[in-house]
Image (cartoon, rainbow, N blue to C red; front, top):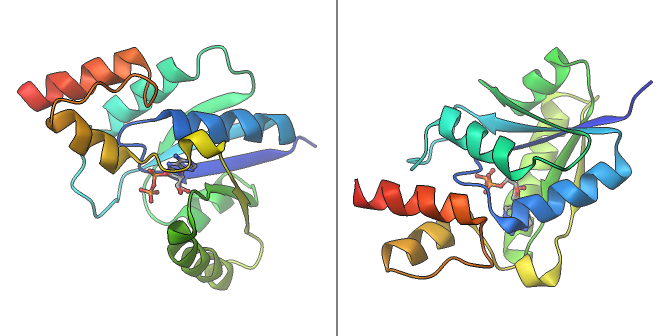
Length: 160
Ligand code: ADP
């Protein structure tokens, strides 16, 4: 049986931090399904379809990655897929409390689903999609934070 994990999130948009986690995850799992959530409470800059397209482009060349999107609870999506492992990235201690709450809530919702945390390279441990969008709106150069085509996509959103 293949060892498949799901990496869910907003990915609004994908950053080198997400890509770092994806590259680490495919070393451990046969396949990693990166799944964009439809029901984020946040006010997204990119539509789910746009986020999926950016992720597909950003992961070309990484073997064992599939990009998908889902509605509803992560645990329900995982069960629909007949899988049991969820991957989440941990950047700073500041991520810990929220991620801890979410992992334990998911465990309560479904005993079969296990959350595995992965840490990115320290050079990406401060990176977030939110920060990138704020920096871009103030005219920052995003080189080193996101792929060039993602930077272009953010900038065209900001000027439209
Ligand atoms: P959320 O699901 O909270 O909206 P994101 O979609 O941005 O967050 O991220 C999805 C997952 O990737 C989360 O587990 C988040 O902690 C993780 N992540 C985001 N940015 C980074 C980063 N720079 N390094 C490691 N993990 C990250």
